[in-house]
Image (cartoon, rainbow, N blue to C red):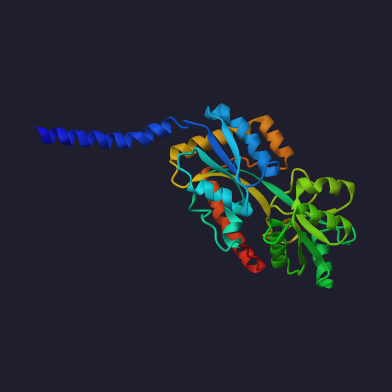
Length: 326
């Protein structure tokens, strides 16, 4: 009889072990959720994350707290989330850098953008635009390419630093268009834009929101939007791709990820909560005002596939750029 009691006890314990995760998933979230932003407070990424965080409490029943873990191009915050308990209570509001570019750009990072995270939802993307100083005679992309080829080595493009998306956009453009625009790195978008306005450099790739007031004032000329589709903020400016540079598609994307191993029911709950927040008119209005182009819909699988494709694309571009960071 004692043996049967022992077997029953073991079976009960096994059942308890099986039930515990299910109960935890059913009760999720059981505490505040930390949403890690991999950049300092006050920037556009931080503002977008805080807009979403404020709208999530009604769906999740727990506060969502934004925590800034800046440094190493987003790698520090990404590592924090990659090492976190995979229970859905620690998330990353990730961007192109930690989720696609840094794995090729940095000599060593302590996470894998595909294997270390479970995708939750794609939030949207921030289109860039190629703008030139008015002294550049080109009025469109075809004219820019023709002028560049007729005057090799003359045209320069500013970036916010080696390995930045504004640098890699120029590398991709040169590769696809057969041009040799010369890269001039700066320490940030502000200094790069200042020298563009002053005529020290010919052009730059920058986000639409930053460029918009200078385009409207005539201080720079917009030649092409860098995404597949035209920007809602610049509907009359054609894309670079539709002007003949096939395959050119550059933007900063934003997506929410959890640590790898987070249970699928928890991911599904988070996906639904973020989708609900993104459907709220005031949230959409605020994010669009911050320059974000919102996706029509997205699943965790779609984000996962998108990240894999972006990792492959930027690996090739980084290798051709020769950029490498410690």
